[in-house]
Image 1: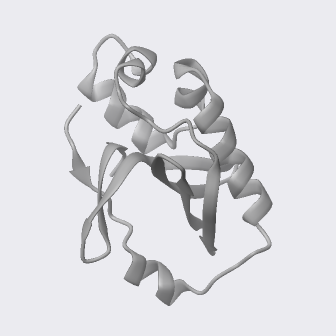
Image 2 (image 1 turned 180 degrees about the horizontal axis):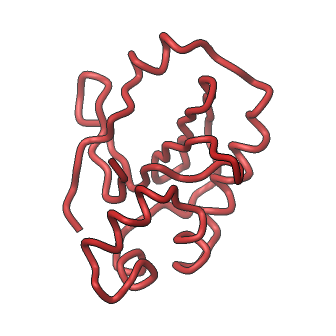
Amino acid sequence: MRTTSAWLTAGVLLVSGCSDVHLPDVEQAARDFAAGDADARCALLTDAAFQAVQHEEPAGCPVALEDLPLGTGEVESAQVWDSEAQVRLADDTLFLTRTPGGWEVAAAGCRPCGDGRYDCLVEGS
């Protein structure tokens, strides 16, 4: 799995305006992702993130995610901007997107790399 730069940046998100209405749902999706096994985590990915993982690992998404150091920690903070969100776990940063099916993980295994950008182990474009 290659490391890529998340499209979401703090500056872009700040321009969108905050919304706390969806905060409980965002936090729950992040907790489910952190607590889930590889199959559960794959089910919580956006279509683009799922396809990117499948492209990198011919054996499938669960096999790919099993080998990645993705976070399992508690939610420390969450911010929501319209249909985008960032959740900081104790040991990871997740970016989520609101879809018709609910909140899904668009990027995971993310670490800040400066200028508000993140390098992520899992990311759909």
